[in-house]
Image (tube, rainbow, N blue to C red; front, top):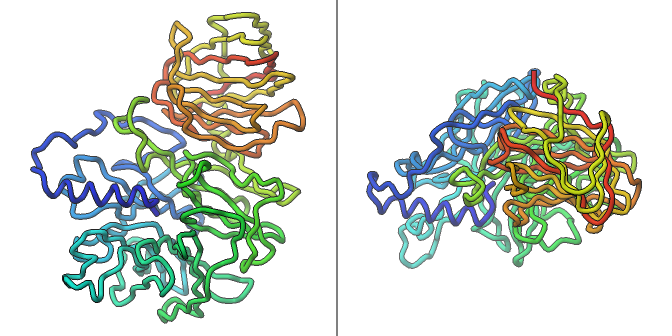
Length: 508
């Protein structure tokens, strides 16, 4: 669900809003016109927060926490109801709106947090986090704090059609003794075929360290979840392991979780030969498939391919100078296992097929030694090539050779001068790809540049989102509000760089 910093901020906003007039225009920013996206969907109302996907009846049912506009929050009684998008091809999406509302200041689910859905027989069970951080709730109207309420607990609702949901108010699961009562969230429920029982993983803390607490049941309808202790996840120092997801590929199990408190925030993964663990880092140590802008990634499979769904931060106000804030656009990658057992991501085929009309590219300005041909570009050390403007939804493919160069930078939002707003840098010497907004690092993903000198890259530009894929192994999701209808620029650093098989495509 929302990571702790967002939870505290949300509570502060709610208390602040209740103390000010509805006519106060100090917190009324909202975009005058919604940006248009073809692939990285933005709902009709609000923004996409933590995603909870489920595939059934030939469709991806993409549940998510909806973050309302600032104007709406001024009059709302809670935050983050569960909304849903649905699609059968990842491209054409139906906005189904709200499915599970938040509660009131006097209920556990004053704010709703991340959860998961499971079908058992003819009934759908949606487990979710109830969050209430108000002082009156925590004290439970008991000045002696003899029996205070918990800030977070697990709740659920049921449905027979995924449209009409009934909250089961007689069920609430709170943190057991020894675990953090204020951080007890993100229930992930699934049927574990390995052990023939239902599992629920809950993100919490023990002695200040993030753990995934396991509960088991023979039938969720009986409300008889039994505590089975934490999963074994060695070699981490994370405060929380948020939004967990487990799936199997071949003979290995994979665990995804979100982390937002160390120097490598984003979605991480672990590998095991049993769902009971131990859950270990991949042998390479590189346990991220995208950077911070792909947060709380969870997966769903259509039986042939598995996809990871997450969200990219937006800025408020929506320009490159705005403050990065919670929730934004839906981001989708295809996720699969390499022959060495490590995970990888690539562009979904449906996206490539949608952006498949060849377009022309041209160099509109050169600095330093730049050699160009119909097949691509060669840039000497410190040379730059400015290319014609990007507009709408684009796909750019090339084979990159860094040779002895230190790095290659892609600048977006470039005008007639070399000034720019956003930079994606392939940092060979640091074995990573990083994104910089106005010179400040905002996201990064590890990538091993020590092997072959040639790398296949694909860039997808859709509205203010830029996603770069490298060798069908990693991705880096970026947000750049200044890129549309502007030129973009490539700059070499520390040696010669070449891009061959350079091609550009637009959406049909």
